[in-house]
Image 1 (cartoon, rainbow, N blue to C red):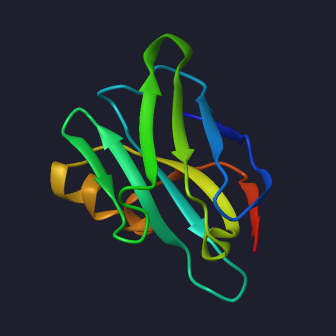
Image 2: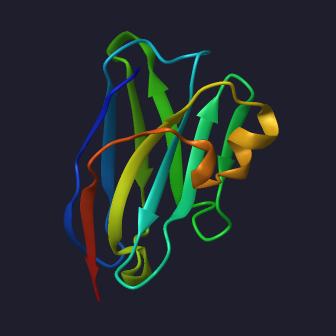
Length: 126
């Protein structure tokens, strides 16, 4: 089973940028749907973005501000976050899903993802 480790979190002011990295223990391209989720204090975990050979998917709240991408040579998926807002403050998790379909990968339902990292904290101040 794949293992994923996140990095790149930190504290920024509103309007700033951060890039999160998710390094996998194996080549995930084509085998796994890779995604980013986040969970703010007192809120449920929500899907942010996903990537697979079927394409990319984003939550409405981050469209136009966040970009998910991959580097196959490094077994790494990135989440570039621009124009950050205080509402983006959360623990960000990388997740992987096998036996996925285009709809399930794009749907960003946490129950479809079996493999999770420990998370990296993102804090945006106003």
